[in-house]
Amino acid sequence: MQSAGAYRTIQDPQQLEELLSQPTEGVVESCRKLPGDVILLGVGGKIGPSLAQMMRRASDLAGINRRIFGVSRFGSPRVQAGLESSGIETIKCDLLDDEAVDKLPDVPNVIYLAGMKFGSTGQEAKSWAMNAHLPSIICRKYRRSKIVAFSTGTVYGFVKMEEGGSKESDSPVPIGEYAMSCLGRERLFEYFSRVWKTPVVLIRLNYACDLRYGVLVDLAQRVFSGQPVDLTTGYFNTIWQGDANAMALQCFAMATTPASVINVTGPELLSVREVCETFSQLFEKNVTFCGAESPTALLSNPSRALRLFGSPLVEARCLIEWVADWVKRGGANFGKPTRFEARTGKY
Image (cartoon, rainbow, N blue to C red; front, side):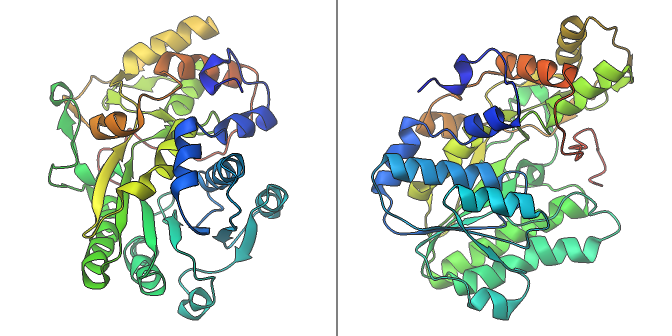
């Protein structure tokens, strides 16, 4: 099987989905060692479908006969149908409904993907309910399970470029209600991990990219359409979504009591200016900038994840070229900008 990083271009959504869900040897081995069924909560979002499909493929390659459940409200019947055709058992459920959650299957392994970011400004109460209250419902239901919970690097706050990014040992300094509610999510998982001795690992993911969304996609679209690029937030991390999926599925072994934390992102600290100049060359279009780089940005240090799981298979330069080719050919887009440039915490 050819690894994702060996491809020079990604032709269509079908090939994209295949590569996003392609398991690494590390994922296959982790699935071989992991006993029991798996449930993914909030599987209908950007990350969930390819993550569930990677778990399915890795389990099959490992020769493990396990059931994989995908839970979501499933606003898109297409997403639900795609998961079902991949061997994922889907369940429609409003996770804020305690009674509905109580009826979900009891499984030993939980992947928690639920949360709210886009449109959180103006819906602060709902954001807190989704991000900070929901974990208490899930922890009560799955107190005897092992939980891999997705969080975000935004809980750290801004750091200086020369510091190399926030480490897991750094104290969070969340900016704005979204980041504060995400820290609330973490604190609830930490609390119930202690109270009920539930093994938990919190994945602080920093800007995954799958060609249909991500910081690189946002920047590429601006350059391609001739819009000025604001340099105020001048640096960022990103990681190929397939690599983020692979790291996440190997995190069950990292779950501890009390909860542990791991940063997941690419090793490169990327410059907005340099990335856009590269897009300018690839598109053969001029790029214009406004503003000047601030000395700080939301940056994470993924050293621990790299030691545990190895370097991403897709390097930043390859990802930039994929994104440029995809945008140039009018590839599909989720229409969900990251708003990575926001410095007030409003999304």
